[in-house]
Image 1 (cartoon, rainbow, N blue to C red):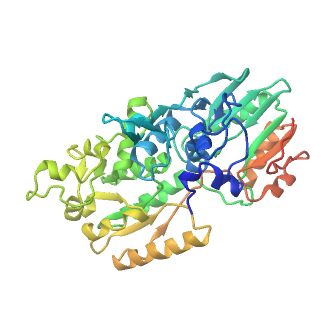
Image 2: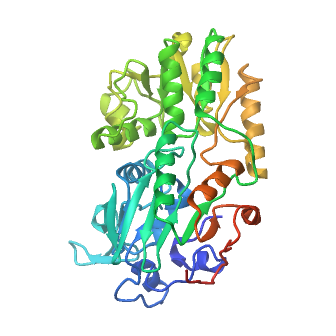
Image 3: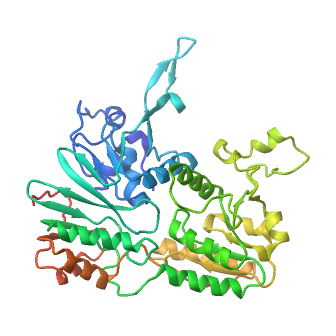
Length: 440
């Protein structure tokens, strides 16, 4: 169930999905619901650890005059979400004023929308040291499952406070996580806010292991290799890109991934380039489905695609379902749940395989979705399949080592369904409670 835009933030406040904090939320939403917005924000800034939606999507509800602090990589991802998303409720980079009107050229009243309604948000790109609200801060990059993840150290009058963000050791940037832990230990923090997604698990993960298993599977496949991995997981993309290099295939990515890689290129971030010999950009049939159909003019063909998609249509590395179908042993085709329909056009031949490289389902809805996927795979002869994944988070033993290394005065677990496990890791664990503030 999605919150109603016409009700501003009230639907989310009703269920405690947003905290009832004054001077934090956008003025247009508050005014529309007859709530008087404060003339000035009550917060000096928001520190964003990374651009996964469970961390950044509610930026949508923040005032535009509260600065956001994040890395360039995180901002690029959010820009891609804004530009390529279809929900219309991202507004992570620019806020679109809602419930506003203007006098049109005929002297009548019209709704304000589109480019006229845009107001840019204030972003401060962090690299090392920064200042917010009179506090000195440090941003330290960490390994996670997408580009631009960072941890923070805030130097307060009471002492340093460490926030881990989401982090792991077993990605390609694991050394960055280790350097963060070393620095966190050096500052002798009064508190560490620590994520605990997998604090109840001792399973050992490795991105290198993902790559090894995927390479073995691809080498044994005579036809097409179809793979599903998270759309913005740049470590996983790197794994399959390297497998493509090693097996003399091309990794086929979708238009949203191509757009993001172009943003990374412009920012100087080291990720695969779409003009690489082992990368292809997949052009799906959309709306009328007349791309490359000579019966229709170029103008009509272009109208099947959004403006941001059109720059890729004539790219040297663009491929269609027909291209893939005719040369199946040359490709590793990324295809997620919403793209399974493309297999109807690609028509995987006998000997093709499927690699599922996403997490196991952890709720009923995801279990039902997986069953749907398996039905599709069975139809196209891609079942059974290979499943291989590495989490973006530390396990219990790794979190234990972090706590023992940093030795904060207080440990505050967040981002976990098992906060009680942290009692085994530290003598002074503070459990956050909804609506309750505390001082360090």
